[in-house]
Length: 512
Image (cartoon, rainbow, N blue to C red; front, side, top):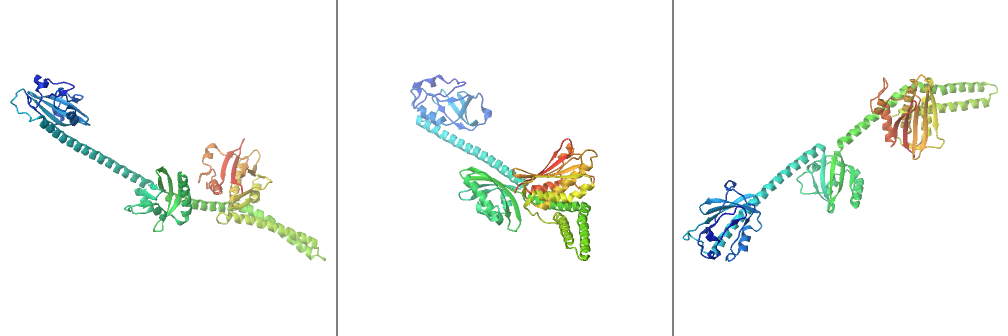
């Protein structure tokens, strides 16, 4: 038998090449032994190995070859070991696992293997040992890789839990067929469930749902599941201790009837919004009271006119009654005038109470032209003293809006008084403020125009910001409150510069 390496083929004794010498008795002794070795013993690595035998060999070449290398990715290396000896190291999967000590000798008296069958048994046994070692090392390698993957997975899960805790966000998977869910650690915390629970279900989520939100939640989610589309829904969780938590959920279909989603705790946001709303309401009330205080002189003047007329007509009626005979027609005329002036005074007081009484918004169908006329009656005396002309441009066709008349009067009154101050700062040109009321499709437009000094480019960017004011003693809340009121009515408040100068503030409301 001979063993040949494709690269760096060794020179073997010539008698081993003779086919007639192969049989049960070999002229030279051939012994094989496997030992574990390290790479430091190796030299001259060849690209592959091949096992060949003479044609007349009684050895089953294919079987020996198959037993030796079938399914193994290996290379071999050899080097002289001693006289007549060679060391062949076998590499499997890149690691030196064994070496074969090949003894080649010319002395016939050296011990031989008893038979080729015994030789094959020895080789097969050694190969089995090597294969077991390979499997053991492969198992160790796989266990090491699995441990590494588990470590990375645990680290990733820890980072995810930490990130979700900071963001107050939980994640979940949901199997719609049976309601089974898988929650992240933060999702358990948001629902205040013990994480050691054996399983999580859709019903556990519904148990925490606020009763007032249950119907809307189920309608939204069921419709999304039926249509297999992404869903977003905000609702409240009612905790066992009675606390209420606001959450925003988003989910979408994933695969095979499963959904994935996230849950965000927005309680702090909603609490802050409620606090802001309460603050705005308080500031709005303060603004109303201050505005009414500033208008007190104008209102007193407007009330004084009907009161003076009532006093005069009452005196005249008294005199006509004292005549002999009494002139009834004159008395009747005076009484009619008294009634008219009393109504006028009552209307002024009603408008004042509407704007100053603290109450929630009273949204109702209102005629926009009436709102404009009420504001004009309130503000006209003040504008007359400022020598500012007030002009009303209202469509004859009725324009109805869903609004709180008192709040809309407050908005327009604030805009008109701002425009009057801007006009008062101009010494030349017309001194005009106009209130416009018209319909634009499905919306009603209430605009206040003036011929004043206008607003600078830098000031426009901060115009509606709270606490920003161009007035020396201004609170900086007037326009901010006005925009807040208008948005509450699902409308908009915008500013536009006029040419060559002046400003236009436009309130747009949905028509009723």
